Image (cartoon, rainbow, N blue to C red; front, side, top):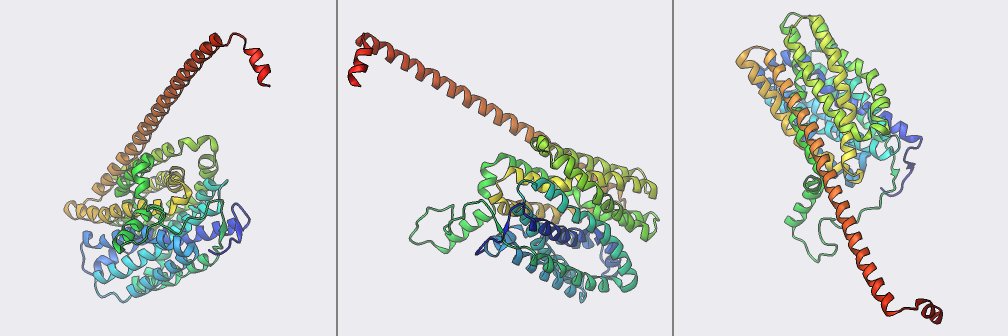
Amino acid sequence: MARALEQVDGRWAWVVLLASLVTQALTMGFPACIGVFFTDLQRDFQASNSETSWFPSILGAMVHGGGPLCSILVKHFGCRVTMMLGGVMASLGMVASTFSGSITHLFLTAGVITGLGMCFSFQSSVTVVGLYFARRRPLANALSSMGLSMGVTLWPLLARYLLETLGWRGAFLIFGGIFLHCCVCGALLRPVATNEVPESKEDPLLPPKIPTRSCLATCVSTIRYHLAFDILRHNMGFCIYVIGVMWMNLGFALPHIFLVPYAMHHGVDDYWAAMLMSIVGFCNIFLRPVAGLLLAGRKSLAAYRKYLFALAVLINGLANLICTVSADFRVLLGYSLVYSLSMCGVGILVFQVLMDIVPMDRFPSALGLFTILCGVTSLISPPLAGLLLDKTNNFSYVFYMSSSFLVSGSLILGVGFYAAEKKKLKREGQAKMEDAASEMTSMHDLTSEDKDSAKKQPYPESIYMTSV
């Protein structure tokens, strides 16, 4: 960007925060309503549970897996252009999906194209909040994540209404127009002034002056930089975080996809089944600002955010076991309330912990690697759960599967962070002891030299005066 128009933590930062909130509501809230269309898509395309599950899995994989490409676009064109491009792509994908004659065509349009567009808009909205806020960054991340809650609240209700009145094709056409609002949000992202030193145009992973470079070397260095392999190799906290979130992500998205079909399968009215996901989002609208002020925004808790995140993941996993008790609406309502509490903790801390672990100037690259690895698990998880459902015809096993991945993922995060911190403290203690020992040795050598000089020069005062 040629010139900076806005200051960090300035007035326009709150406008950018609102744009980020709306963008997250439009993009990340949409996967929550896929369960509303699950039965209709399965019936229209004559597909099994596992085949239909590929649609949300491909969509989720593209939302996460397009991270490295998004980081390249953000680096070269900025967050504004990337977010607007994402809105256009998401809209085109949804409009094209209304002409789908097969489920494979739906995978390509509403899955790949729309998912990639949502990735560009969503990750740009996360990155720009980190650039516009420094002092209030944890609070800003918590407030912007309210967009996900609003999306989870409104998308299922809107999807249910449009499905009943226009069918799934008409609903997807309306969704295409809704995604164009990401372009409006992107237009609000003005350039921001930062204290970071401008990066050199030369590749930082290569020597500063290289006469000629082959095309292969250029591609390899570019991929290494934008995929943040150097951070993954040298930053143990980032490595633990990526592994833990990848593992827990295998179970995190399953309730969003299978809760509504599970309730409908056991006789709950279609409208009230869709309402369950809306309740989760509605509770989060009020919980996230409070949690952002009490937990994420407090400096005294900054060192414990990663452990709070692991605790939220653990509660989220244990909450899924409630669904296995009964499919009664009152039980599922209680589950939605507990799940919304844990989802609030996960939502406000997932990107804040990443910002705490990696430097902000490398955050887009780290976010790209983080999301593409999570995209792999997002691609695997729903079809695996759909296959399990086809084999057993029992939704309880899906929630058992989700709970096991989340609980084990929280243990990986908590134990891994604790072990890494202990190792770091031990290494720092050894370094301090070595420094103290070297200091004592140098003082001992200095004392010996002083004694020798005192023997040779019995009258140091006269020498001092003469020299003066």
